[in-house]
Amino acid sequence: EVQLQASGGGLVQAGGSLRLSCAASGFTYDDYAIGWFRQAPGKEREGVSCISSSDGSTYYAASVKGRFTISSDNAKNTVYLQMNSLQPEDTAVYYCAASKPGWGSSGILSLIPHGIFGSWGQGTLVTVSS
Image 1: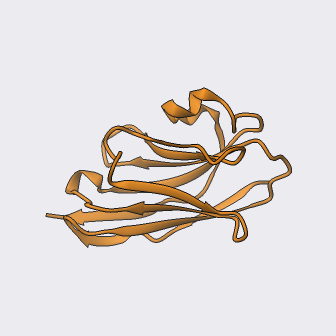
Image 2 (image 1 turned 180 degrees about the vertical axis):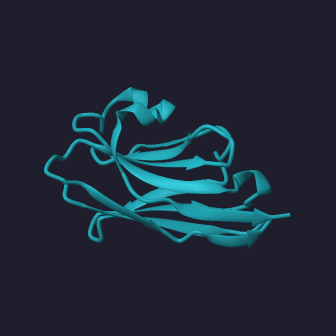
């Protein structure tokens, strides 16, 4: 069973930075992606970024491109989301998720579609004050 543990959220002022971590374990397959999603109060869940386990390709939502960077440390089985230039609209609960098998090389990852992600960690709250 795939398990994910997200951490690193907190309170930061606008313009500040945070780094989220997602510790993953339990994979019995190789071709998958790890994604970051967020959900603000009263809003739908939004795909933020994802990274392919197959070739390391990375994808970003337009709202965070240029400010957020996703990376992975395979030795630690951890995926990071470095968030810079944070704005109040980035306030949300952030979740990491692992895709179902076989999606690690799919071009659909560019859409960061939550439907292909089958394992979810608990969220970590990011609050950006103005």
